[in-house]
Amino acid sequence: MHDPIAASRRSALRAVAMQAVVALLVALAFLAGDGMRAAAAAATGGLALAVGNGFATLLSLRGAIPARFAFAALLAGTSAKWLVVFVALGIALEVWQLPPLPMLAGLATGLVAWLAGLRRLGTEQATKG
Image (cartoon, rainbow, N blue to C red; front, side, top):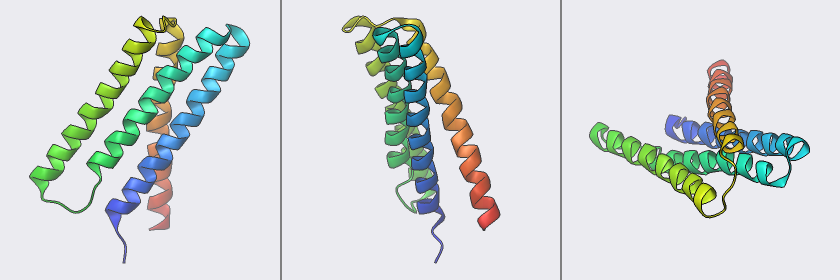
């Protein structure tokens, strides 16, 4: 039997893994060019978003539930994602005093990688089914 919710959860978690890999690649690029602090900032931005998307996936795609509860789960997942991102960025900026531009670069490439990963994995599922 085909479970579309489980398939969606797997696809989203694969997109999160791709997002984490891209975040680490961006951090390596900053390490080569600007040093350790810039690399840590880029990794923080990208990985905070990957962790947030992982939480959002786990909260939002829990199984077959009524529509109003599914919508509430989607809102809770999205809220948790951005809470994780903003707390991580706040800590990185205020406590660790990491530079903001590499952090924003990591965050931006994380967003693009997330969308590209979902699109690619969604296309793969459509050709299999």
